[in-house]
Image (cartoon, rainbow, N blue to C red):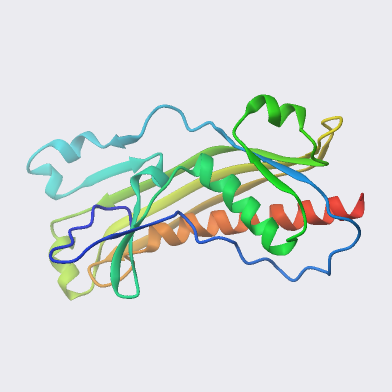
Length: 233
């Protein structure tokens, strides 16, 4: 879950939001000549709020019964976890990480294809020398955390959950022809799921939900891009 790590006497590693590349479903062998693709930086439509805190959580006394926060830019907050027995924090900027993850996954599946990642809106609109452009938008990455110190915080010692989280994520991806801008494929990816977290379990539940959204979006988008590009090559 999103948290600050207290690592006494040991170092904490930094890690990207997702290990690249994403595993793809089985694809046929490459057909035809290499196809050049341009992957754009996605539009970030999540607004200006980093986090929203429930007012009751700021009041001493009542905050023992309820505390709630919504983290709108969950990628910036970081995900606490571990790797090889050492604490780590996964963090990054989804606006940059998502195009990089798409490009890395395409390169893994089609090593001979020229793949360019651009942050330039002008180059994204023009298409450069690419045959197809992959573009999209980040609409929502809301992680809501609800916790209770009394009595659930005490009962957590016996295994009861004391934090409840929900994650709502929305990503849009489109593939268009670079020469005339015609949309070849467009899809919206959504997730709205909940998890309970206890003292002994569920510590990486938030990252699991976030990662599942990324994996689904990248895997389906890359498979579609390869299919469309090879079909029309």
